[in-house]
Every structure is written in structure tokens, then in C-alpha cells.
Length: 222
Ligand SMILES: C[S@@+](CC[C@H](N)C(=O)[O-])C[C@H]1O[C@@H](n2cnc3c(N)ncnc32)[C@H](O)[C@@H]1O
Image (tube, rainbow, N blue to C red; front, side, top):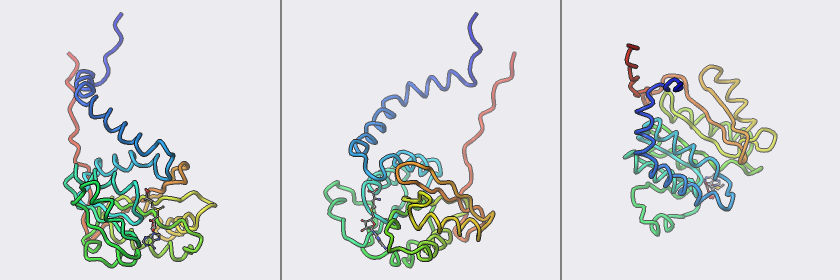
């Protein structure tokens, strides 16, 4: 006896066939960064998915590196603005890769937080510069507050090196949860040094990210 068909099985099969080549490319692409077990490797595909899922139009990052190439690629795919900041000038790497759609800010994170681009708000932020012991819990907390201020309602902030007990930013995230209460949701993925994901739940002067996926109606059973 044939088994029961899955919801929208035909559509799913069509999509799988259509996207197979593309998915394979994405996986290979991730593999490029995965080989050496770099610090953010296991978070790169996830961040790409979040950017695409949010239909992000404005993406920001502090802490340049492998993530920047992946986010630049996602930004191009989504026709989004991507602003990245590092206290060192790594622009030549973007130039070498032929990536000219990124706004590069050379300087301390304070420059990023005070920049007119940041004042316009972001859909997605990636913060990967807070792992040093020299960066105090208070300083991390201050920056997290700036990040929450800078995103839209439902905007997502990803913070790397967030494993509890290991990095100061983890304690700052606990403060944030206590102080903001229902204003933010925080989840920390416990691998690859820890990736915290913060969602701003409150209204924002930068607007709101709404779920725009249309819900497909199932045909009624005959
Ligand atoms: C861990 S690396 C970033 C790795 C990168 N995101 C990746 O996926 O490969 C941290 C970077 O943050 C930069 N950095 C550290 N503190 C900073 C600060 N206060 N402001 C701006 N950049 C900072 C460092 O120069 C370094 O390039």
C-alpha cells in the first residue's frame, strides 16, 4: 500500500530538483572555510540563512575576517548594504576578491556605533570583537546596548565568543537579559566558541522586520 503523501510533496520535490545544484555550491562554499576549523566556520551558513530569512536590507559587522566575505556575498544576493568595521585596514582583501559593494570602516568599534550608517539602523548585526579579557563586562554591556538600539524590531544581533564562563561578553549578555526583560530574546549556541543570537522584541525607530512569507493554502481533500 503506498504511504501517505507528505504536505505539498510535489512542490518539495520540484524545489529539491531545482535547487540541488545551488545547495551543493553553498555547501562547497561553506566547506572552503570549514577545512581549517576557523573560529566562525560553523556559524557562517547559519548567518547567511538568517540574513536571507530576514530579507535583510542593512547588515553590519565589527571584526573583519571570513565572516565578512560570507556576509558580503549574502548582502549582494539580497541587494543589501553591508558595513564592516575593524581597527585594522583589511580593505585590500576585499579589493583582491573584487568585492566593491562593502562599506569598510577602519577604526575602533566606537567609530562604527557613532557612524551615520549605524544611525540608519540594521536588520542584522554580527559582533566578533569582544573575546579579549581586556574588554570588560561593562564595556561589552555598553556595546550590546548600542547594538540593540541600532536594530529594527525583530532585528537579529549575532555575538561570537559568547560561551558562558569563558568570555566577558557572556556575563554582559546575562545583564542584558535581566535589564531588558521581555525586550530581548537571547539564545547561545554552545559550539564553535559560542554564538549568541539576540532578537530585539520592542518597537524601534528603524522600523520592524515582518514575516512576509505567504502561507500556501493546502488543497482540500477530495
Ligand atoms: C576574531 S577576529 C574577527 C574574525 C572574523 N569575524 C572571522 O569570521 O574570521 C576579531 C577582529 O576584531 C578586531 N577588533 C578587536 N577589537 C576591536 C575594536 N574594539 N574595534 C574594532 N575592531 C576590533 C580585530 O582587529 C580582529 O580583526
